Structure formats: C-alpha cells, structure tokens
Image (cartoon, helix red, strand yellow):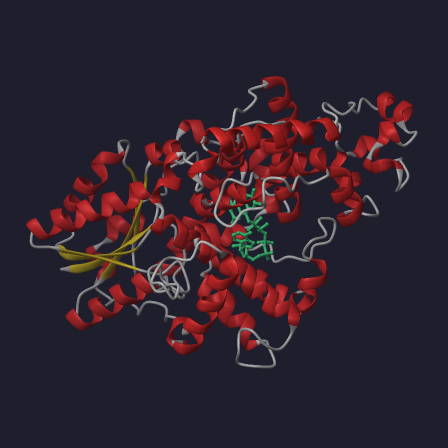
Length: 494
Ligand code: FAD
C-alpha cells in the first residue's frame, strides 16, 4: 500500500499543503509516499500554455525528482495524450501501486474543478479517496464576504478583509514541513518509478536549441532558485519596492511570478518570509516596501477568488457583461505590429520585444500594452490575453485575465473605460531616461532622452527612419476618441 500525491501547479516539496498531508497520512498508515505528475498535451493546448512555460515545468520536475529521491520518495512522470483519460489512468496507477489514497492541491479553473469533482465520485465508487485541498491562495476562496454576504468585486475592501482574515487566522501563514523520508524498502519496491525518465515536451511545445539556451540562462528553474530569489529580493530590494516597482528599467520587483505560476514557491512562503524580515508582525505595518509588496501578492489571491465566484470569466466572457457588445476592430496588420513590437510607439514596442525575448514583461508595461491594444488599436482584448498566455513564462489564467480585464476596462474593478493611457506620457513618466527603451530597441539607442519617447515628432525622424524604426501606426488622439465612442456605443447597445 501507498499514499499518492499528484503534482500539478505546485512543483515544490517545501510548504506544499497536499504533499504534507499525504506524507502525514503515509506515516500514520506506515506506508510509503509516491508522487506523480501527468503531462497533458491537450491541457497545454486548451490553456494556451507557452512552450517556454512547458519547458520551465519539465526542467523543474527534474529538480523535484532529485529532491524527492533524496527522501526516498519516487516521482513518476507520464504523458497522457487525451485529457479525458487522466482520471482513468490515475485509477489504474493507484491500483498498480496498491494505493487507495490520492491527495492534490486544488486548481480553480473550470475544467480542472469539473475534472476533480468527477474524480472524487469515481474514486469513491472504487472505494478510494481523493482529497483535494486549498493551497495556492493564502486565504482560500469562499472565506471573505461583504457585509451583505456577497463576494467582493472591488479590490480595496476585499484587501482589507483579506488582511483582517489573516490576522485573525495566523495559521494561514504557517508553513508546511517537507515530506518525511520514506521507509528504506521504498527504493526497492518502486525502483521502476525512481528510474523513470521525464518525458520530452509535446512536439508543438518544444523549444529550438537557441531558445533553450536563452530561456535556461534567463530563467533558472526549481524551488531552490525560487527561494534564493526571494531571499535576495528581501535582502536587496523589498524595502524600496514601493518606489521602484513602476520603473521598468529598474529591477525593483521580485521576478518571482514564474515561480508562483508553476508553484516552485508558494504565495504563503513569500508573504511569511517578507513579514519575518519586517519590523513588525503585522502584514500592514513596518516598511512601506514590504507592505506594498504583500498587497501585490494579494492581487494574485484576489483574481483567483474572482475566478471561483464568477467562473464565466473562464469562458471568454468579460467580467462586466455590459461590455460584451463593443465592436472591435480586427485589423490584423495592427495586431501583428503590436505582437512584433513595431507600432512606432517606443514604450509599447520595447515592452512587446521584452515579452518575445524573455517570456516576461514588467507589470507597468503589461498595463501600457494592454491599454494600447484594446483602446488605441481597438482590438479585442481577448486576442491580447491569448497572445500573452502563448508567450509568457509566468502565464497564469486568473492574473492574466484579471490584468487584461483591468486594462481593457471590461474586468473586475477595472480602469474606467474613459481612462485611456497616453503611451507617450507613460513613457516619459516611467522610463524618463529611456533606459528600458534603449535596452529593447537598440536601433533607437543613439537618440537623446527627449527624442527617444517619440522620435518622429521630436525631430529624430530621419535618424529613426535610417535605423528602420517605424512611424506610429495610429494617432493617439484620434484613436482615443474612436475608443471612447466604441465603448460608449457598446455600453448603450448592451
Ligand atoms: P512583483 O511586483 O514582485 O509581485 C510579486 C508577485 O505578486 C508577482 O509575482 C505576482 O504573483 C503577484 N502580482 C503582482 N502584481 C499582480 C497583479 N497585478 N495581478 C496578479 N498578481 C500580481 N501575472 C502573472 O503572474 N501571470 C500573468 O499571466 C499575468 N498577466 C498579466 C497581464 C496583464 C495585462 C497585466 C496588467 C498584469 C498581469 N500579471 C500577470 C500581473 C503582473 O504583471 C505580474 O505578476 C508581475 O509583473 C510579475 O513580476 P514580479 O514577479 O517581479 O512581480
């Protein structure tokens, strides 16, 4: 007999609730713990998981396999081609391993919740138990309600409730122990599982050699890397986070999103460690940088709560149904220029080139390019949301959908639709020295700090043209007017 933990987006052995519970159960029953991860190409397709993210997860599995092996715990990894076969395959594996206890952390996207609900029944019919527990949020969804007993649809009051709830339930930021070492016999009994190799990525998600080299250098994987990144951020940057977090040319943020998205670190660990570095035990006191950082990590919880309460956001629908009737433009030349970073707006182009090169983009720039696509180009925000998922290494459905909904003014607690970012002002305010633009658009490198934000209108047109940098594909003022009318017309017809 054995107890099994099923890894999904929780690729770590420290502070992993389901894994800790599975380990405790195994110990109590005097049986070994087995871990499993299923590669599901259809899920990658359905969720638009980017090749760089798939690669990051597969690399991480190797680290995890070694960490678990050091505790004599096997990690078995298998590809199951059709996602509908996963529940049945899991039952088969359980039988093969003589186990009737499966544990996993809950995922809140609709497909996953439905699958898990079905599996709980199937397992029960087979006299097995499948325990799915809350782990990914610090405050599990369903705990916070307005005075009227409703789910919050506005961040600030939600955040106050979130904070109060944690202070009343401090066990929410207690960290879970690593699993216990397996009995010695496990090595022999499950030798084939220890020996299994980690399969390759599905064909359509593989990286080229050049991409592998680039992304492996940019994004070292695994939970040890995540912990050292968190430690370094807490040592060097967290106390100035509130000042620097909006400056894309400055590495003032943690860069932990890739780890939070794959679960190589938990949000609980992030908040707990940041709190322990503070002068106070309160999450909303002490260093301003620490407070602001914790409030950003809280956004991640917020958007996951939204997903649970309004699951239709998973179905290509705007959170605000009244914005379902906007007449979008489907100008593919504009869309391609946006994707490739050649709109003629340097801050937008720099950001898109950062995304294409790194699989990552600074938060301020995510807002700028999302506003630009949905308002200046009046292109359906869902095309941008999809492009992000297909390219981000930290792609996370809830945060991405929330961020796009915010910027396109169709989401939960959004920017009002009449607030249209002016790319030039954003550029001058947040990249005043042009450092970020210079990094990503080398052809503008020789322009002065003033010229670089808007070369053709600041007397540097000849230089920009010579370097092959394009003119603006739209006029911001006119585009703003067009967006306001389209949003208004959409609202009126909704
Ligand atoms: P830090 O500033 O160090 O923040 C720490 C952590 O807090 C982040 O790693 C992240 O987990 C969380 N966080 C911070 N800001 C937000 C936010 N606004 N919403 C949700 N969580 C937040 N984040 C993703 O993790 N995945 C996405 O797919 C994603 N798509 C986005 C799309 C758009 C249009 C926008 C506007 C934002 C998106 N974000 C997404 C949120 C945010 O941009 C990134 O989390 C952040 O840039 C990651 O960098 P960091 O780890 O250095 O962040």
